[in-house]
Length: 219
Image (cartoon, rainbow, N blue to C red; front, side, top):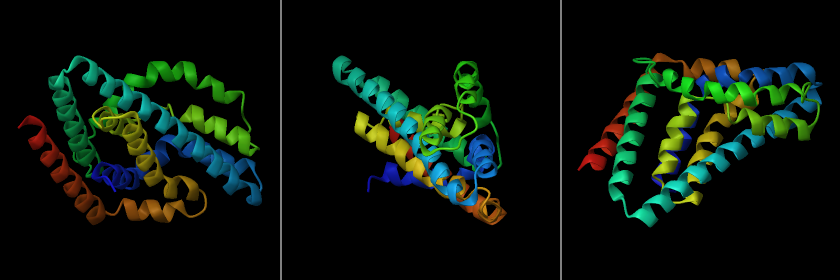
């Protein structure tokens, strides 16, 4: 497995607490508005839609920057992007460790666009079918999120549309356990994720990888 894919998966798992806050409302709504036998399939459909959007935007970003570098030969642009990706990684570590919440400010970048996109979900409520769940997930995948933006910076330097999509897929897969289990015991998983020792060890690990990436980006 590509180390970037593995890193994206781990960040998805560790950052899932943030995802519960950002996207958990829709999952909770699905759980409340459907009978028990319908909750899980529709929740899975919603998350499939969310992951589809992640992969599409990852492919677009990865492919666009790979094409730009290939056509222009501007390797310095790629190096600059690698520095930005490493800095985002460090920001993720600081956020997970709860040492600095500057990553949340990045989310403000997409709020203006989200004002135009979010009304589309209103027409699909209540979510009572697999199809509606998937479409809502497609839309909700564009919700402004600092963690998603961080992963997109990795996609930008991934070298291809395929790698960009796979990085976003792995990140999304990492968030799945919390998102699928919400309302069905996710509070236990969140308690584990919020454990001080677990968060500190995870944050330090990501911070070291971020510093390692930054070192190789500038040298």
